[in-house]
Image (cartoon, rainbow, N blue to C red; front, top):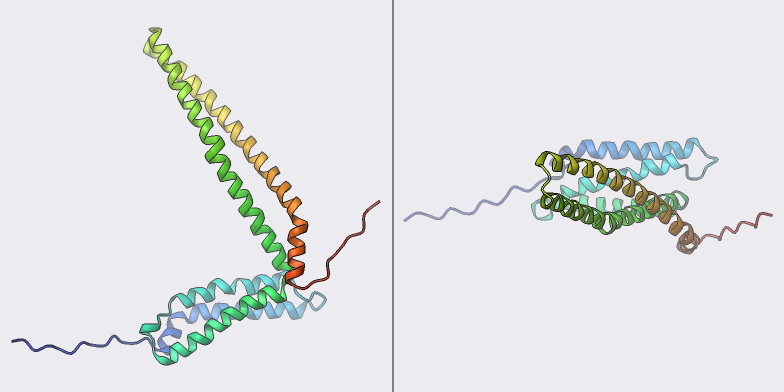
Length: 218
């Protein structure tokens, strides 16, 4: 009868080992934080220079990448305590980006909304409009080839006719796709232009800012 061996406990990841694994990422994040403070201090005329905002914003994906390597069940108590504080740093960094850089955050949010709206309308145009046009064009070319076959045209003439129709279809579909992209862009700018006052008013309410009302130009 074989004796049962005691189950070996998995070796826990220590704080020292964790920092050695992710020391380069942590060091890079520290460099960008230092750059954010450097640009904020070197340009005192601007309370929140844009380059300072970007230097701080770029640390967020680095911090999230470090956080991905953490496993509570396989960590020592020192690493657990370290990561709890580290999560607080990520949260407070997000809070600082939202609160201390409202003007730059507004530009980023506008860009995200504009990009998301444009991509959404573009995909809708591709699936609905261009999909129907391509399907209709394909069916028409098949029907035309069947008509030519019934008329008894030689195979070489039918292939030549099909090639000409295929080229004409490509030109037509390319033109319609370019026209669709231009229409989507114009529609996106129109929607953003109409919704922009409400967007700014919402941000004014969130950041408790005094609404900026421009006098009418005569």
